[in-house]
Amino acid sequence: MLKIRLNTLAAVSRHSLINCSIALLLGIGGVLPADAAEVPGLYSAEVLIDEDAKNPRDDAYRAALSEVLGKVSGAELAADFAVIEQLFPEPDAYVTQFRPGEEDTLWVSFDGDAIERVLRNNGQLVWGNDRPLTLVWLAVDWGRGDREIIAAGDPERSQRESRSIDRDRLLRERLLDIAARRGLPIAFPLLDTTDLQSVTFSDIWGGFDDRILSASERYNVNSILVGRVRASSSQRNRWSYFFGSETGSWTGEPETVISQIADMLAAELAVGGNAPVEIVGLNVSGVGTVDAYGAVQKMLNEVSLIERIRISQVQGDTVSYEVEVRGGAARLRRALRFTSLLEQEDNGFGDPGGNNSLEFFYNP
Figure (tube, rainbow, N blue to C red):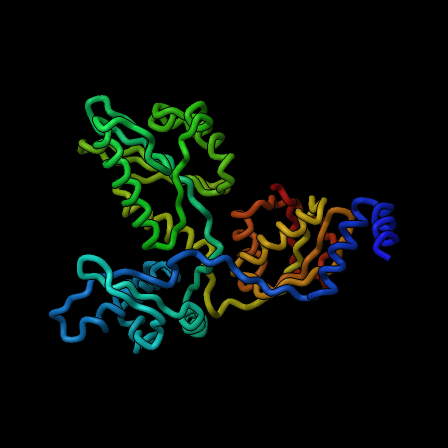
């Protein structure tokens, strides 16, 4: 029986085999739930605890909840203590874990699903787990001709050069901590041989962005932050930011810039709780293998705007989906910019029931 089945499959064309495999998956589960990938620490925070306060733990819970809301909904809500008190009159009811931290701090973890329900039910913005990873190229002029690019790890150096390693590490950890507090995933380049052959300190400092963007392609990111910091100078730090086809520029300290980027992305990707759920037609071409189908499915599952997905048609290397998405086609289009899908012209193929249809091409 097994031999007959293998012989039969061997005679099927490549696209037919893909269609059969997808059809088998559909038979196992016709409607696929969209489970987003979790951003580590999104619903937890570590805050100072004042042991001299009347209710130190309750105060710490409120401070931690405010920090979490800044990551999940945005800086505006996080700063509006009156609204937070109205939405969450008893923050301790949402605490799932807590433990003492270092230097008079308390680490607190909250029930993310419960917090998200409260926000959605009250029409507040919710920024889900579909967050672009930002690659940070940071050039630092330490003075007296000492210039470096901050790497993901610490290089092998002599004891005499350990001071340089320490200050680089402290600056890297400073940015990582700031980004974690805003729920913004960031990473630094490896600065291995491949990177060093492509990008120099002068390229970053001089604004040769094309070289930086080209060197970033190996990291498969859509969001790139380029910083130029003069450590011992009154001159303001300069930053350039690239995401999709859009760019931005700022001056100032890392705390300010990271917060501005987080607010900008939240405005792009967060959706109000009262946003209607609409059915959108999504056609993805370039799905030439079963592995490609699985990769596309995984990508869509990680888009938090998507409530449910149903495959409506498979034709050649194009898979057509009916997608229940909060916020409609415009919001879905923005979210998909941070995946390995490239938007194409809408040709109307597979548009379910005349609803809005998006056309994308899988580009691993």
